[in-house]
Length: 463
Image 1 (cartoon, rainbow, N blue to C red):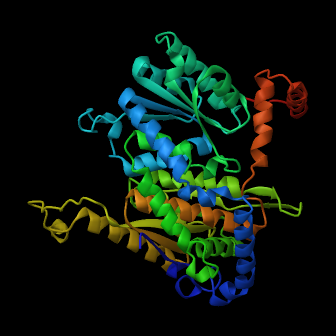
Image 2 (image 1 turned 90 degrees about the vertical axis):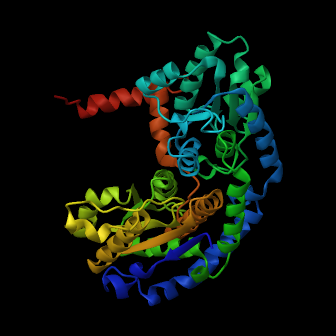
Image 3 (image 1 turned 90 degrees about the horizontal axis):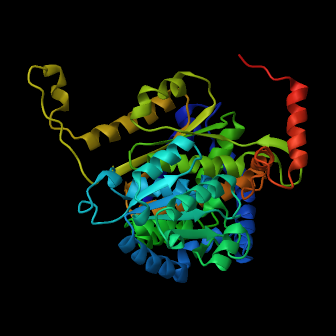
């Protein structure tokens, strides 16, 4: 089994009656979970949850592998232009599944595979410094936007296109557009100007898109075994489509997080005890926040619900955040991600002249980090702080594929428990529209006027 969920420390027997979950709580939720399962499977069958079936799209994988083979033979640097769901999954799996310093290794040390750079911001200094580092003749840009109009990504694209065009005659060869299969600016450019392109399947939102060309193409180019990644997701699919939520790790963890929220724990901390898994917490943060943080319930009522995700890193944040988790407000539930096998290990030697360190001699760093995770989990529980642990057998493409799939299903299941739509993000749209207005986009003149009226009305204050 690639992944195991231990929820002992979520229960009242471990953390106390007030914030701990009782078997009666789970029993009371069971009829609702069965109904939700039926609704999810019906939505899947009707094509309204297409992310469920991405691990089984062999034609998509074959086309990505063919393109990746050509691109890694042709280019030395791959640059992802994208934001949010167009970037975070790729970053998480890149960090997990390639050597820690992949981009710093000499070409022969990384088997002549390209380097990967993910530009998920429009900080001019970051964009400028990246372009200064790259060689336009040996760089390819993957431009990722489902709508084809994402202001950050399209701005990056315009700058990169100009930069490449100054040095390379056939500049279109240096761009792959990943976008909606039918509509939007990027799709039109692909059709009219001949850019190479890949579709993001209909109904697959950005934060559920890592198993499409959005994540699979850049990962395949840099040598990640995307077939094993999808194999892990496909194996997890069997576990997370079981109707009995007590036998389904995605449903069970979603239910536990929901019950913790109802008991006054609105902050969800994810704390992997692995450098390789650090950015998985960052990807999950978007998945959990954007899917569940909603003003309106499905019936239109104003509810303002949603757990707030926080990322931490063990053991680093034992020495920064855990003090707050242990003795601060009772408002957090912690999910640890632990590893059984780190792939490598280092033995701790003795230190001459320091007999007080003798207890460490002969032990290993893997033993130490595993002990720290277990100790932190118990200490939190003993202080009435609920927590659970997801343990991976090792960091492999299969285990990461399984973990990503588990979290995606957990999120749509939790959305049903919270009675919100986990696939939309209406709270993001107003900020987008005001940005369009401030940048002078046609059709948003009224938004610009509203912006000016707001500032005049509240009275700007600064120091």
